Structure formats: C-alpha cells, structure tokens
Image 1 (cartoon, rainbow, N blue to C red):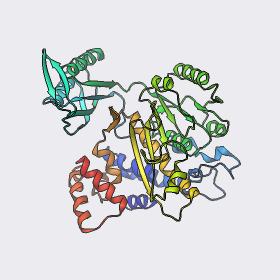
Image 2 (tube, helix red, strand yellow; image 1 turned 90 degrees about the horizontal axis):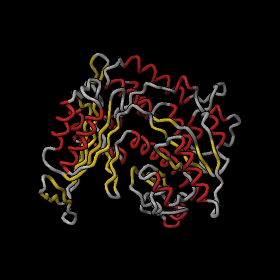
Image 3 (cartoon, rainbow, N blue to C red; image 1 turned 90 degrees about the vertical axis):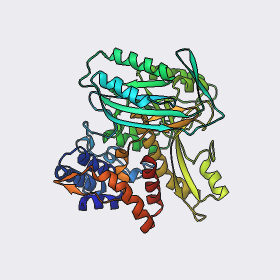
Image 4 (cartoon, rainbow, N blue to C red; image 1 turned 135 degrees about the vertical axis):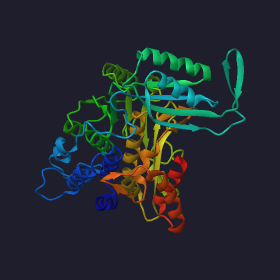
Length: 448
C-alpha cells in the first residue's frame, strides 16, 4: 500500500496502471511493485550522470537546451512492454463487437446467446442507451411490420474470447449481420488479429508528438506507426529518435490539393487505419476528410465549441476566461465541428498571460489526445450523428478511485470493487472533495 500511496502522490498514472493491472489479473503484486518502483525512479531521475533525460523535460514542447535528442527517450528495454495487458485492449483470440441502433427488448440476450452458441465467451460487456427524443422517430422493418422507436437508441460493446470457437468466423459474421437486420441495428466487428496502423501529422509543435511516441513505446497504444508526415522539417529529429520515417510535404494554397493526393496514396500504400493530427496546423480538404471518415483525430487547443479556429489562447485571454480546455474530435469538412471524443479543462486567472495559457494548455492537449487515440484503438467509441458515445467499463476507472483497496495474499480482492463505489459516495458527503475528486465521484456514479 505504501507503493500505491507514493505513486498517487507523484501522479504517476502509467505506473498506477501497471499496479492495478497486476492486481486485477491476479498476478503477484510484489514482483510488479519492484518494476513500478524502478519505473517511477527512472522517470524522476535527473542527475547529471544519468544516461538519458527524463521525458518531463519535454512537456514544454521545446528541444532547446538538449544537445542529443536521443537522450530524451529512455532505453527501450526499460519502457517497451510488448505484452502489456491493457484492460479493454484485445488480447490474443479476443474480438470486439460494437452494435448500435433503436433500443428494443432482447438485444443483449440475443447477441450473448449468439456468441455462446458458437463457443465464444464474453469477457467484458458495456452498454449505453440514449434518452427518448419525441422529435426523432426511427422506423425499422421486421417481418414486414413497421416498428416505431421514438428516438431511444442503444449502444453496446462486447469483448469476447473466441479461443474455443466451433465454426468459421464467416458464420459468426453472417449471423451477427442477420441479428442486426432483425433489430434494425449497425455493427462493427474486429477480430483483433491485426495490429492497426496509425500515421501522425505534425507541423512545428512537438509536445503532442512526444507524448504519442513515448506512450507508444511504453506499450500503451497498441498500434504500429509506419510514418510521420509534416509540412515542416522542424520535428524530423523527434521522428529519427524513434526510428520512424518522416516525410515532408510543403503546402501552399496552390499545391494543397496535389500534396494531399500524394499523401493519400502514401497512406493507402501503408494501409493506415487512423490519422492523428498532433497540432497539425493545416485545414484538411473535404475529399481528404471523406477518405478517412471518422478515422482522423484532431486535437484542438480550446474547450469546443468555444474559440473555434485559430489563435484560441489569444482570444481566450482577450475574453478573460477562467477556464481553458482541450478537445479531441474527429475531423470533418466543418472546421472544429466534428464529433467530440474527449475533453478536459484547467482553471486559470487574470494573472495568466497568453504564454501562461499556452504553457498550461500543452499538458491538457497531449493528455486529451492520447486518451482519444487510446479509446479509438480499443473500439470504445460509437459515433451517433455528431456525437461520440464512449463505452468504458468500471475496471478501466479503478486507477482514479481515491479509495484504499484491501489485499489478500498480495492481490486485489475484486469483491471490494462494488463496495468501494458506495464508499466513494459516502466519503464525499463527510469529507468535501477537491475539484479533481468531484469528477472522479461523478464518473463512478455514471458507470455504476
């Protein structure tokens, strides 16, 4: 428990993640704790004799003062974890099924029975339903009978193990398609047997790029990054540090369409599944956006829909805001108006000038972007109209729980999880929480 409290005080989220993952999977906490302590010390090590510079020195988004860029990255032997068992991320022989459509009785039971009938076991299941909207009527056909569902929609994510599947995959796919037609729903099935590929677009700001590449090296983003594209040469040293190809496409008003066509051909050649605009300071054309519909994640440095477009920090400072934010959303033809995936905010005051807002906002930007990318890679997002439905399980939120967990034989007692939710709410009544804890309590009530 001392290790847990130490990591919480240091706000060492990656190490907390490994700690709870070790506990939830019934592995020995003692062996994991030694790795956590080592990792934590390595992250905070800053002596002159150190062989590498901690990543915390990069959060300001500047390479100034660093002579050898390669020292910014810890050795791969201490950070790379190819067997990282992220909760919610598909393991070997685990598939993810997303279904969405009009709410009706029997949806959950039907899909569960379908999978069970073919020897598949459900590992995790998360569902959400929207509130009823009389102004939006969905009509589906079932046996030539028109059923009216007054806007109430159902969304579900099923993570299932197909190690003992008794039929060909195509049989399961066809039956899922038939079941979706019966309920008037849409589905997305990923068997998890192919790592997705992600390309990163950048300009001159490097803080989001560093965060993505460091998290990827640490095994938190389960994908391959075959290339980084930019309209400037400035960030080539960062890409070379991680041995990732870096290609530059200078863009002007006259050459934009031609350059984007070359980029699209390159992305198709690399079989890229996801594009991440890590402070890429160019507006994509409609044909480019349509080529990767709901597969382009952009980070905008304001709390949308406030301060769309350029110079949001300057406009926020002129307006005298008391909160700044960052928003990760899918890029669409309408600038900064795509479905919002993730957001976060930070309190500021009249004492902060524009430089302070930019400096404080960088931390928000990189964390929000990583959260959005991670959710997309784990198939936790269903886009409904212009909204993103986030499907997260309670197990994913144990990290943020400010509750002491009891241990038996060095492992976390899962029976305590339900009790802890009640403890959080009761403690909140007796001990007034701070702003961060308030968000935690609200999150647990929502997931409960």
